[in-house]
Image 1 (cartoon, rainbow, N blue to C red):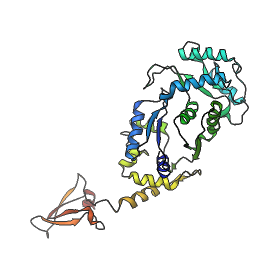
Image 2 (image 1 turned 90 degrees about the horizontal axis):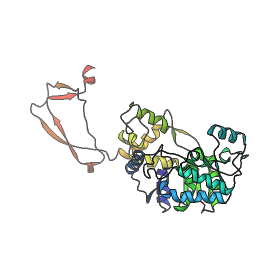
Image 3 (image 1 turned 30 degrees about the horizontal axis):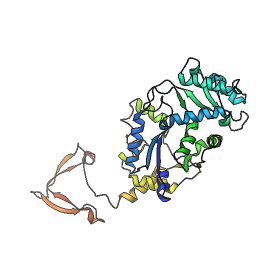
Image 4 (image 1 turned 180 degrees about the vertical axis):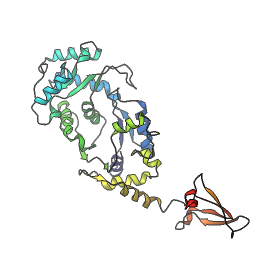
Length: 343
């Protein structure tokens, strides 16, 4: 998000935010609200917000066009056999179904019939391709779980790999930045664009940002949250936007750190120290200085100290007087940390 935001501003473009809600089993309003909250913390305001589900009817029409072009077919092969056939480059028994037969089975999928629920739509590409993502990938599947936006209106949902290039093209996306963990899927992305005669989109890959000794897997972090091992996604030990901001990181520091790395294709393990060093450089000149002791502080009486409180003024920042003044109270009774008292 930060890289997209940076380049959109640098080249006077528009940042588009789209929620991929093609799988009702995984998507819910909580994730949407969480992403929007994180973007707000980072100071990112997208030009437009949309959902893939806004285009479900359009994507279904494109799927039917794929049947008519002979570039897709409906397959009722079970998942295990399909996986084995794709691995060995074996064509499905349904690969050469007629257009009429594919449209008939497609109708059964849409209606959610007993047989339709066993089917999926696959692209007709190349079962011998060295890139296995191109071996007739699934374009549509049946899901009966209610969608958090469309309810039970649909029983068929497009895969991300089919929906993304279509919606990118029709929404006017010119440049898409993607982490290179999806590099083998770019060929499939471009195939969908070309098969449907859509406006092409330029894709630029960059390496995913990884930190040493840090778990970034969404699945693993979700498990930690769901099992109550932390307070929530804003736990200061978490490598989430809300977590590190709560720990004291300035969003400006994060933006500077990300832009300094740039869209590099090199895979590197980054040290947290570099990020916190940038944070200190930005925060140190503008943060007022305060002092505090813990709740278990110990009272200490001084023999040579004012009997009555004396209040003096001090700069809240010695090098930045514009931050204002604070008070220093001089008195015979003071509070010190318990650890200091026991030494």
